Length: 114
Image (cartoon, rainbow, N blue to C red; front, side, top):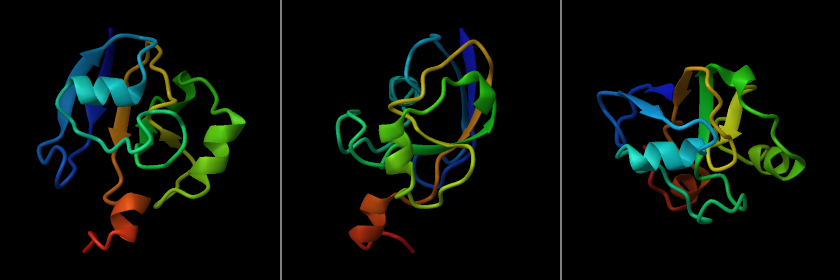
């Protein structure tokens, strides 16, 4: 099992969260299975950026992003060098510390930021 530490997010997990997940599972599926309702507007098909996360620790344990993911990440709000689309990033056996950005492109375009 892989330990995942999710840093506090105002809406999705105000206290933060720590849980175990199966290696090979996507970060998005692990978050959803543990009650963290991260957006995934394209139903996890690598067609949007709503599930964007920043990997604060353990980034190197994830497989490399493919070209489609890299192209989409360029459009993500708050992009950082350790950003990934959580629907595409697969867990290995190394602990991850994940930050969910405050906004997504969806939220910004709908005027829900503030």
